[in-house]
Image (cartoon, rainbow, N blue to C red):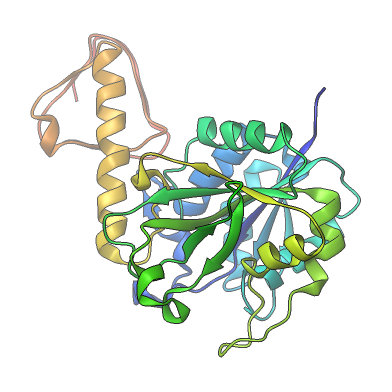
Length: 296
């Protein structure tokens, strides 16, 4: 049976570690703003009217970057945590049945295939939600996942609140959930800002759901790089290189000769016909279209 999928894309933050006047999700990798990569992935999963982007810092510019995608928007005027961001989207989506995914505008490498696995994992259970987890060699800074005897999540413990034994756990929280929409909207308002930052955290829903008799499962992703969130210019450069390497491979496998590819920069939306040759140090940007048998 088909279950409708709704998506909330969180894109309201400033991203202070980027040391930039520009909102983090507007920084570019592979020729697109970070938030555009995530929006495109979301559109592989569901229709644009079921996607709500929560905007805040530089909201007009984020709206403009996504103007051609057909998605809807909700405003988070004060950044009070992930739970609060989801509350800001409630008016847009509370009447929509099915499931709800939470995505982040600074996680551009997440694959649609992974999200489909997450949806399938949630669809096959009576749980309130399923959370993507992964295992890190160095989990410093991430919330640790504690499991119960049945394999569901017993708790998510943040770094600063963890015991030495819990700090040794390498399975971490990605923040990417697939919820049962009805249970999410029923219980989301129960989150309280009982923490030092006085923010509303989605992680509190695990305990809230469990008190109400609903489990939260996990989907473990083998490649933690897919879940990488961009926080610094170093990580931005790393992700840009990944996208550009993918584009070069795509073009070469399609019949384009690229001489000294390590020196060439080509944006993701560029199209080049077969038997064309791209010479060293070329930069081909935007939505450029080059035909067959051309030399650049």
